[in-house]
Amino acid sequence: MHPMLNIAVKAARRAGSIINRAALEGGALEVKAKNKNDFVTQVDKAAEQAIINVIRAAYPDHSILAEESGDTPGARAEYLWVIDPLDGTTNYIHGFPQYCVSIGLEHRGVLTQGVVYDPGKNELFTASRGRGAFLDDRRMRVSKCTQLKDALVGTGFPFKELSRLDLYMRQLQTLMTSSAGVRRAGAAALDLAYVAAGRLDAFWEMGLSRWDMAAGALLIQEAGGLVGDLQGNAGFLDKGEIAAGTPKVLAQLLEALK
Image (cartoon, rainbow, N blue to C red):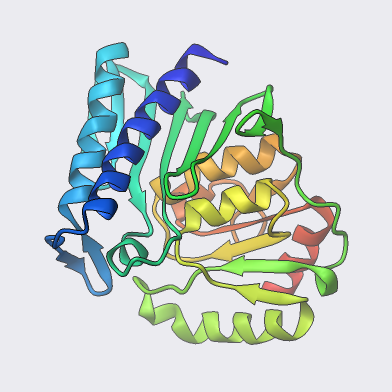
């Protein structure tokens, strides 16, 4: 395992233990609304701090972009850790078991390491650029699905961008009638990991942040899939939208999204 990936795994597991412990204790969560339909708890903050502590101990001069604490610059800006300590907070608040820790690493703007960890199921999805993607110790590949009509497609509601809701509803209607099924589980990073693992054949969503996509995008690429914005172009991390899937299904998904 690449040394930097090893640190990401250590950090993700440390955060996961905090998330699991809080879930098992069953105490009242301090829930605050950051924006409409967008929540944060003390567990998010504690998990994020644990991740930052692990990274800082190993690489004190790297930069960090984290959901709750924002941008923490370092002296060596060519390395950027992109962190979502608890993707799927709303699910977590309600005890719906679909949430994860997501940690990506960019080197000079290129994704090089990615970890998505599901603490509830103890599933660890990892990838290093050029070295493949893995679920625990097993090599991952995207599914062999070649037709959108046979594809199980994941999505996420644009709950932060309600101005695009009409567009999304048209997209959803199209995909509901042109695919084998559409699923919305509520944790984009984990949905992307599921595409890499072949559990979903494709995925699309608007209104995302960099930390929602970074690790999952690398997982898919290293598992043989493709990612882009809703036109299939690069720059999806900056645009905040993503379409992903098996190579043949993605092309048909992009055509349907038009």
